[in-house]
Image (cartoon, rainbow, N blue to C red; front, side, top):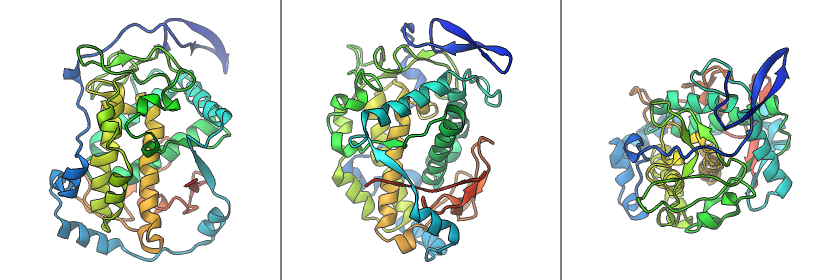
Length: 374
């Protein structure tokens, strides 16, 4: 098996076989044209105020309300959830995380990049790309429909468990409150040579730029763009006009919506899409709807999205931690019994197992149990 993260590799022995171990740096300038990318659909704050996000999916308010009413039930207290609430895993916000906590997360990601692919997600060339390929395969099933939030919550948790089980990650998961860096993503320590590498402006032709500093300098990716799989570099193109729209006003607008389906639409086409495009530009990796997890900042960004959902739930916890509504990609109502799958990396689960971060439900012997630190 050949790793394609880099120019050179060092061999290590694993279970009696010789596998290439990735090193970083020296990747060629593999920028693909913007014609090969399809960026995230977004709506501005003013457009969201006018309900444009609801028009995108053709879900009028009355339908959303009806869908939610079917699933609105008071949260049941169980022994699992009580035990979880007493000792949840805490996800630490980037600005409050220590340098060792930040570095521990990055080191764990690099560990996955250096592990061989499972063989279950071809053409992934390493274990990290298994998870990227999973997202690519499931893209149409988990975007632009009601599964968006619940599936990505389970996907984030699955990623965390893989880091812990396969790379010995013992630190807290780190999330990034993007509103604290609104309008100046490029100045955030997230995008520094000490951590995830720079967020450059587009070049003179408006194209993304390969990341050549930081922990993932010279990274060559093999999944994407879109449904294709061609080698290309980890690239970014910062757009502070978009990042400036990721602010408290937008978060507050979404949180004012009482229907889950309306809230989810606001979030998906608002700060979620804006964050992707603010980092990826028109042909950077984070703007690739299919393979955006190839950029390791994906996990920080989607944790911000998930935190926003948790915040919405907390505003009426007795109801909203079990509130679900809307229609999935196949035209079926999303219910607490809808099954979520992550391609066998972890067991299939019903929505009810993950809709509450403090459910405590055992998934493969591990409780689904965490909360954000603010």
